Length: 313
Image 1 (tube, rainbow, N blue to C red):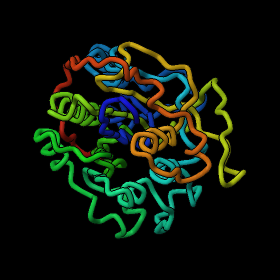
Image 2: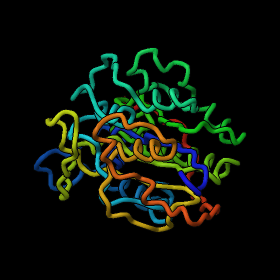
Image 3: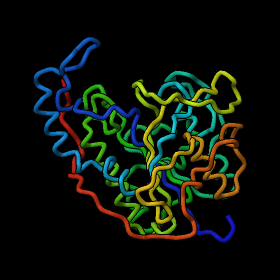
Image 4: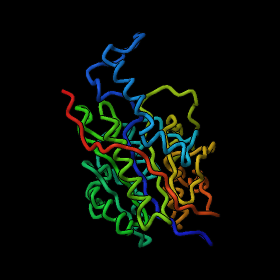
C-alpha cells in the first residue's frame, strides 16, 4: 500500500444471527404465524427495551461511524457456511456440519508471508473447523484485551463472543434466546479496547454478523462469482460497521460488499494472494475508508456492564 498508513485489522464476529429483541426477557413467550399481538408479558419488556435503546452500541455506533446498506452475507445459507466464507473465501458445506475443513484460509496466507494473525474466542473457537491446524493462533478473549492495552495487536485479529448456551439464553451472540445486553456489552468491550489502545491510530475495526437469521428483506441478494456456480447467490443483508481513524463519520456506503470484502481488504493491505475467485472479485472494504485523513477521536457509548444472564429454563 503505497504512501498510506499502516493498518491493523480487527474483526468482531458479533453473532450468529441478527435476531435482536427481548428474547431473554420473555424467553417462554413466542410469536406464531397468524398472531396479531404479542403475548401480554411482552408489553412491559418492549417498553423497557425501547426506553433503553439509546444505550445500545450497535444502534448508536451506526450513527457515528461508517455503515452499509448493501452488505450481504456471503451465501444464502446458515451459520457455519458463512463463517467459513469469512475465513476461506469459499465454503465446503451448506449446513452446520462440524466436519474438519481442509480449505486454505486467510490465516495460511498470513503465515506464509511471515505476518501475525490471531483468533480470539470467548468459549467456543469457530476456527476449530480446521481441526488443530490453527491451535497456535487461537487465544482467549482476555489476551485480546491485554494485547490492546499494550498496543501489541497482531496484523490481523478476529474476535468472537460467547457462543455456547444459546438455548438457555446465556450466550452472548444475539442468537435467540441470548440476552442482547450481554452481546452489546461484549461489542462495547471490544470497541473500547480498540479505540483506547496505543494501536488505535493504525487500526480498522469491523463489526459484522455472519447471517441474517431467516428474516424477510425487501432487497434481493445479488450474485457473485464463485468456484461453485451453485453458491453464487449471496445471503440477505447483515449489519456491518467500519470503525477507524480513517473511517468516514456518520456515513452510509451504498456499494455492494459481503464477508469476502474483508478478506479482500486484508489481501490488499498485506499483498496476499486471493483464496478464491470470490474474494479476488470482491469489492475491497477499504474503499469505504478515507485514507487521506485521520481522526483519532472516538465517541464513547453508555453501555451498562452485563457479563451474563440467568438461564431461561
